[in-house]
Image (tube, one colour):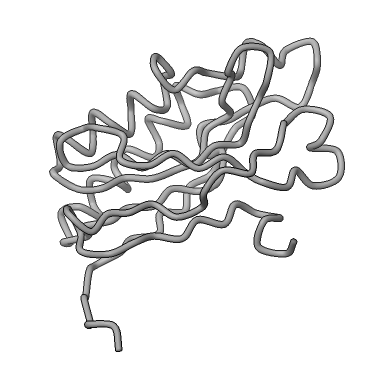
Length: 157
């Protein structure tokens, strides 16, 4: 029998404007801050909430790297500032490949987990690569739990 561990989780819902990452991040910030103020230890944002573009012409400009991406930096810096875990998916560029990637930052501002979507659905396969990597993030040292990640269609496949 698994031991019971209770944590407070916040699912943040915010609107998203295509191709307006600065505004999307600005709109999400007070919601993240409110969740932390209410005691959330784990704050989750919507899939690709910061914005992306389904257009080959503008594709490269909307993707970001995990090392220097605007959205990843937003998640990392706010997780550290608010002393919480924050997770979201980003439109990741890695070389010539693009992924719908879930990132989780810990209260130190470090990425404690990265999960790439396994099964791009329908037209997404024209933009995203799939990944067979693990879909569990071990947060046993910081939250006392392991987190299973299913991104959109991954929950159906």
